[in-house]
Length: 550
Image (tube, rainbow, N blue to C red):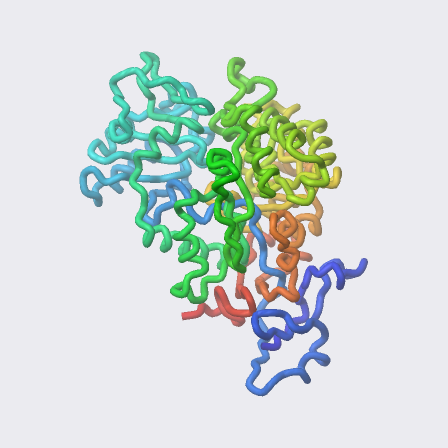
């Protein structure tokens, strides 16, 4: 086709000028899944072949396909029949939803759900040590095992039937905490029903694995959600190796016509360390599925008090979070990844976890090697200026999720205090030090909407424009920095050479939008809609006129 529009923003640095940093053109010639030429309509229209359509999309602007540098195409609590309550108001509301759901199930069927967040519940909620107990869920569905994943997926809340299914007696003292995890206990030592970080495996390992056909259907269902949001490439933040066949079928199989999201997949780093170099994980390299990255975990999440901190949590003088991996284990994983030439991406949220991750990276390779392998820190939410300086010296990349900031700001200072929060979600400080930064969503923990992420990055305010002026506004970024973090800079965060992504030409991944994000007021971004998503020159979602494809 020949594509005509006055605001085709290529994001190609070779076309950028001081007056036009977006590299705008008026026409594209697309053939064989690539952009053959970009330029003025007068130059391209004479190149039209017989029968080649001319398309003029109804849109405010056309951009490169967006990249989400940290999300999950599938995960715990994400079955197609999973219970979701985004209006998470109280533990009693969850119990009512579980009871309603259980009425349609046979006895013994598992109920999974996600997105509880006790930090948002009213002060009079029935909590123990700041968390719910199993009793409400046990009464709501006594004949069905119930597991509800916390909003950050670093804790689960379950009922007595789930405890029994996992081999735990709700009426006997809980076993010892595993390393990197915590079992919350009632005053007499019995399990309360909440398990944090590594302890969640005690419950989730009992949940039956989905059939491969069901997993394929789930991945495809979720991939369409990303394409509908204008996201053509997803850095899938972790899959288990035994799920790889389902991903190959879902994204690359001959029975997946029209589903063209690109999945850049992370494999668990501990698998490589366990198997050693004699049994490397498969490295898949196709245009729509790649595995070049290992994922490690240094700590948990802030909301479940699992983020590993240098100093105690405010109000909890005996708690500094959880080290999911010891410093020695992190160094071992880093050394194994360096030997194998893998990219390493480590989940690190608390300042102690970030420091230990960076020290492990420094022990494994020199900055030139780390730069070449593009090692990453995922989240990097609560840090210190000294460790940002170290990250810059090591030339590591950072995957931030802007929407985490504007969700967590409602309660983060209760756990960290204002002084530490001045260095929380430090996008501006990272960019000022020259760090390579990409943005993403961490979906399904937060919305996958990239325009909500752009709004958060520009304002550090929620959808109601609160707080006035933004929360710690000194960490905001510019519009150009934010858009690059979803396009050209995001492409640079992947291990493989993905420089052709995040720009229009020669890659023919693009998205037509209802607003122009390069000029729209931040508030307008929240209403942005995707009209048309194109991958490899073919429609992947929507239509040029905004009508849905049958």
